[in-house]
Image (cartoon, rainbow, N blue to C red; front, side):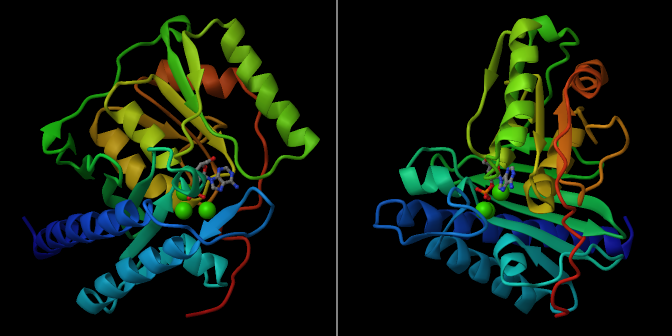
Length: 285
Ligand code: 2AM
Ligand code: CA
Ligand code: CA
Ligand code: CA
């Protein structure tokens, strides 16, 4: 192993430690009253815990790795630049499933991804309610609580469980495409369609083979970064909904156990377009 290879392994151990610590803060905060406000739309929720946990994660990592770059949902909301460079970059979602968190619906996660030269190197996702830890490092396999995980090998949509999400944008045109896609799947007929309210945990369920495919429009780079490594290392595919390679900043993704399953989504479902994560250069920091 090269020197750099060793140091990414060290970064992964630090990421696991920080994700666990952050996850426990979230778990404790669930029991207390939350101060909820909204961002872009009335359903785009944020709490003080989102900001506190992101601050905890980034300040801890920055102290260890001061030369690295950091992208986080709440830092971006505060106007920081969301651009992936060749530098080692941490991509963080402090609370994935904020709406679930607000309702104490037990599907909430901390997600930490790490990229070097724009390539995802490892990902860590911690389920804040049950303490399940998902990890993967490029070329080293994917794990759930330390045990190897594998995607579903199902190729036929009529034997599939499909996961998706609807974001905070609820205008009629968006809802029309969203419901049209669900109807298409239900009449395929897929075994079922599920919306669990956490993109990162939905993607982890693809990695463990609990569901066959996941697609979403409107999500962000911090929703995909960690999970993409976990799914690929579990033998699955993560691509763009157009069928091309995954673009972390494109706000759309399809993940599946098999390419056949991913292609069904690419070929049959309609896309909803969103402004790219890196379209607004934001504040240089
Ligand atoms: P969040 O809780 O970190 O905001 C709920 O639909 C899931 O989608 C959550 O994982 C949520 O992440 C994510 N999400 C956030 N913003 C979104 C958007 N604009 N469109 C679609 N999904 C979004
Ligand atoms: Ca959010
Ligand atoms: Ca998220
Ligand atoms: Ca979040």
